[in-house]
Length: 454
Image (cartoon, rainbow, N blue to C red; front, side, top):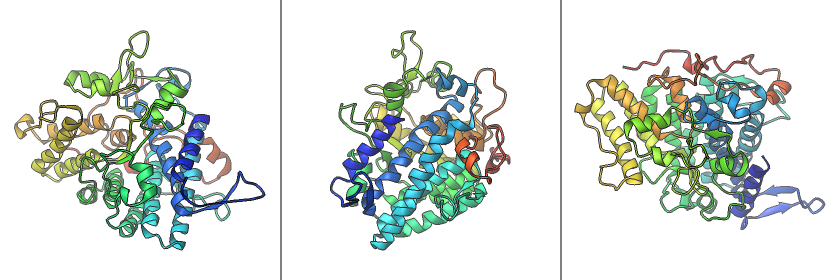
């Protein structure tokens, strides 16, 4: 964990070098106060560790995209987790993330900086949305205020979703048509690459669509997604150092884990996704995985040059392709296969432009005649999303929400599909309101029902 803290501290100082910081003269190592445009980098980086770190790795083991290969990761590969495994991630999400978002919001209001307030609200929604998707009922209204609420209540999963949708609606009114490049801190934090033209209001709508999809509100998800990220170069990206100085603490977090911190802990030797890509002849196989990293030739996440997790590769929070695939699924569930197919092909074109020659050959578009019925089209949409969301938490959300519609195989010898993460031991020890759920096989509230499917 030390190198992760270096990552946070280094990036915070780099991003805030030109901003005003109030220093306590009696204790110069303690920052007494700082401007909100500097403080926002803290929760942004906590969000990075939340969606790109340990939680994402474990979710992708559960969805059979990675293999736990060493130490405690061998246990994870058999769905064996303990409450203590989630202490650090929970602290990062709440103490370092959600609490700081609310501080930034307060300071932004005082400074009359509407756009900054709105961005803090969007980051808060991303953090809390990740928490509720993985744990179900979670603290929200009473969270991150230990003086007033030393033992915050756990609110119903659906209630928190509704509150986050309201929060995002308010954020959209605050950010207006601001882009990532309109604010200096935003440009430095998110847009270190020329291919990112992120619009904050579109990001907020895509996050709304994602939350409503988790809830099973397919009409609402469809409406929000159509207002979401509208261009293939407008993703919300977590960008990393674009140089080769691997000791500066700003590298891609998957690279950090697989190379810098825990070499050999996580591979892909028994994973399902690489076999699926091979069967489909999908060019992403050689972008996602390598077989020359280990001496025995086993598969490994591609963390070197040209791979998806190379040290300076950006990592997505919410994307154009995820937004289009939400549209595709919800349109099909609403009996609009033509519109669904169009959205699916938008994603095919995205990947062709990124990994192919841009001529439609590597990822050819589908035609209506390729599918005998709507059930086959739905299977293809969900399979494409499973593949596109490699390394992200969203594939775990979909596996549970759709009752594993595309039949992702469980890990060898397992008979039950993981349905959640267990509450952290640190919260159990300090909060008597923690729900008495100790098994990862208990569905969260939104996943207790049956997926409508086709």
